[in-house]
Image (tube, rainbow, N blue to C red; front, side, top):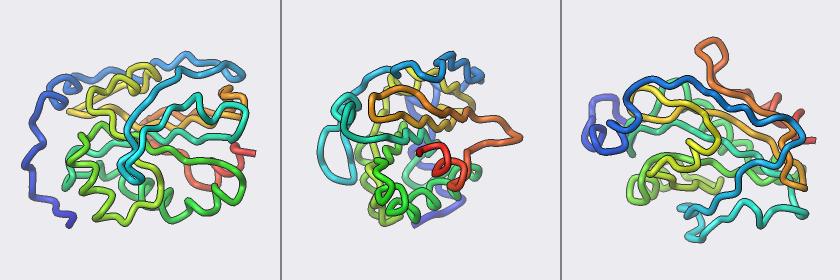
Length: 178
């Protein structure tokens, strides 16, 4: 259940590691292979390795900002819901959506249950993958970003957080996935 006053679990090691603002510095160029990673998929109970999609399927990496299982970034929450609601559209076009969060596995399980997740939700509490993609951080959590990879794992589109344009909308992502 989503509440705006339940701050339990907010102040933790991840919060302090990501407290000070670091702007997104991602220097990945279009046409370049992005960093590989392996993370647990909380939605399906498996391990996901990005390179397993290479040569098979396009991928949308949706880095999102969830503070705790009860506290969502107000700029990211609508985007999280929209991606989940439109997951079938991406799948229909041959695109896998991998949502990456910095919440731990227990918190992520609650998010999956409470939001009825269909999208694979990958848990990265160490923020190792967020840092590899240089998405930046502020106020206790990494910043959101979206990366579209072609079938060969090469970057075709990226959107980094800004206060003027915090997340790429669904239409833009669908357009850039083809």
